[in-house]
Length: 273
Ligand code: ARG
Image 1: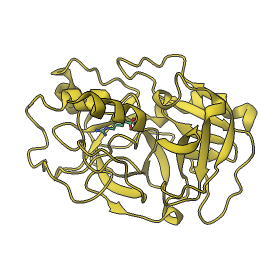
Image 2: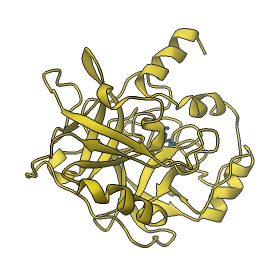
Image 3: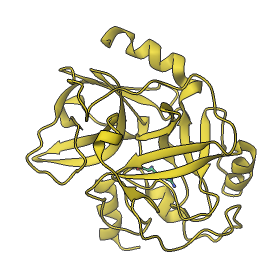
Image 4: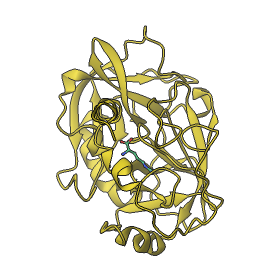
């Protein structure tokens, strides 16, 4: 991997080098039909309108232009739920939130300024533990057909339950660019023990506060740039895009469990409602 490529990924979707480094290691797969090539976006998804995903936001880094770094979900007019790894090491003054837009390519977008970044005190970069955080906005979002909150799932979903993830992330783990138009992909909840067995090969631990999701037919996943975004079951936020080895290759995607962290979220959010 060239240095320039490395750098580019860092700027595009920070903290996601794990996927690329580990992706070259061939490992047995519980997704035997995984396709190495995908023609959709996210990976193996399809283009959608923000009106169908009004809870989806784009988290931007403000460096003369606004650069998409992560996805997020609207919890309340001033509260966005995302991944801790999207926030750690950043300052509120450098982050803006764009809601109500299907595209990340509109350079006239100014977004909403941020008052505070909060991430879980138990977040560990190396293990991806507790990869949950909140972005507190300076001004409230005005709800509309393209901007709406999503309720939190209070309980976990059974293995095989259909779930939908969305975002502007890469459409292939080797892609060098994000996708400009919002994409969604239909996945299923994967058995945590099976997922744990797969990841154990690489010395990663799937904890109780993580959820794995993939598509039985393979070829579908979230990818770099989707992090922090929603995994939705029955209209409720069940997971937050967190990590994985590669994208849509041999491993399920790993999501933060919202039911596990629901108390943390409610407690942290209380004073900003
Ligand atoms: N860490 C990535 C990001 O920051 C998300 C990776 C999700 N990977 C996966 N295979 N589902 O955007």
